[in-house]
Amino acid sequence: MKSINTKNLLLRPLTMDDTADVFAYSKNENVGPRAGWKPHETIQETAEIMKTIFVGQENVWGIERDKRIIGSIGLIEDPHRQNDQARMLGYALSEDYWGQGIMTEAAKAVLAYAFDTLGLCLISVVHYPSNLGSQRVIEKCGFYYEGTIRQAEKLYTGEIRDVKAYSIFREEFREENER
Image (cartoon, rainbow, N blue to C red; front, side, top):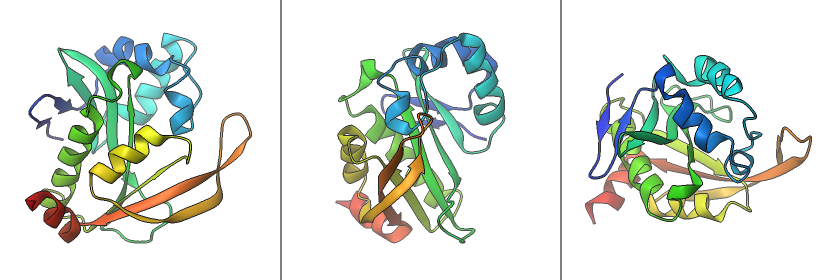
């Protein structure tokens, strides 16, 4: 899998050497719950998750800035669509970098890669209604709001939450980014 360079970031495959950086943001009580996962309690827990979810996976990148991994972003199979040319975008970012446009920059780069290099036709994304930062990223990327899926996801706490669903077609992304 190739790395992606943006103006301010390097999106690159994660390795086990990144475990400490990933743990640094994943243990934060404000990061994981916004994406539906519990904060990591130990670096060993992060290492296990790295092995199963991040390392060696296609289309999953660490977000590097100033030689540190400050977040992750990736494309996964969309569980709501039976379309081989569609993927779902997911991401997490260290709270230290919220509100700086970093995730929007990373997401736009991954969308361009998804459409131009992978030849995908549609990318979807969901967020919890309370996660307004994620909603801003999604809107800045030009996604179209599809609706709210009620009682869509069960959290690690057992709580069942709604998600707001969005998608963008290749043509829509290109039109949005030609402006």
